[in-house]
Image (cartoon, rainbow, N blue to C red; front, side, top):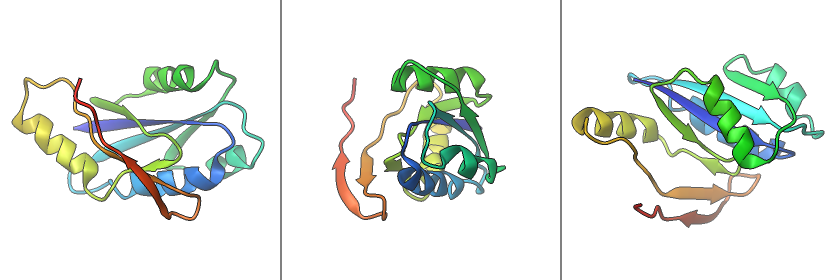
Length: 134
C-alpha cells in the first residue's frame, strides 16, 4: 500500500522540517510514502531547503490558499491512500503502518481519521486535536 502525504506550506520552514522528519520516519515496515510539499511562494528558505531533499516532491507555485494547495498536491500524487498533514503537525511513529493495517483488515472502509498532535518550531508539544467521526 502506497501513501501520498500532501503538506501545504507558506512561510513555515521551521515547522516543515519537523513535519518532514515525522513523515520520513514512517518509511519501512511495508510502508511506502510519497511526500508532496505544495508551497505557495515562501520567502523563508523553504524552496532552497526543499531542493536539498530528494525524498520530498517540493512544488513551488502560487495557489488560492491552503485547500487549493492540498488539492493541487493530491492531483500530483500517486498513492493508494492520500492524506494531508499541515506544517505544524506530525505523524507519531507507526501511524501510517497502523492505517495500512486498518485498511487491510477493513476493506469496506474508505476513510480513516486520527487525532492530531501540534508542536512548536522546537518540537515541543502545544496541543492535540481529537478527531471527530463524520
